[in-house]
Image (cartoon, rainbow, N blue to C red):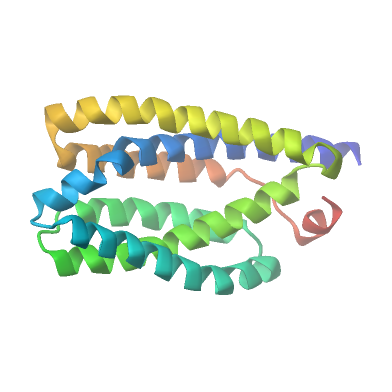
Length: 194
């Protein structure tokens, strides 16, 4: 039992650090997304369609991912979702039309669902029932602070260097943060114990 507690704490530290980096990546780009759509010739209506496509594709994907993550584990979905997110962000740097944006939005929603569904489940797996609220509260606070800091930095980067450089930085952060997740330890037995 002591070994399981140590592994749980280790996983939580790694997971919090990794997802704080991911939140940093999202914060660099997320708030300026409307400006990006405007730059490729889109309107406020196109922004609504683009965001709606992310939510719709993500919602439908979540139904499937949750079931499979129970069978094969959370870690494969977290790793796959993180690395594919880096690729998707790089594609944003080269698109030039709305249909390409919409396609990326659908893919982005699917990949986000892979990640977010597995993220929530893994947090439940690695936190003790008695301290789950406290641990998840600390996790959310640290991840949120990272994203807030990135939003301040993101405005400066986008105005000085443009979206392309920001996309490259975000993709690199995704790769680094996901690589840390390779150190997570997961077993089906642990999912039942936690």
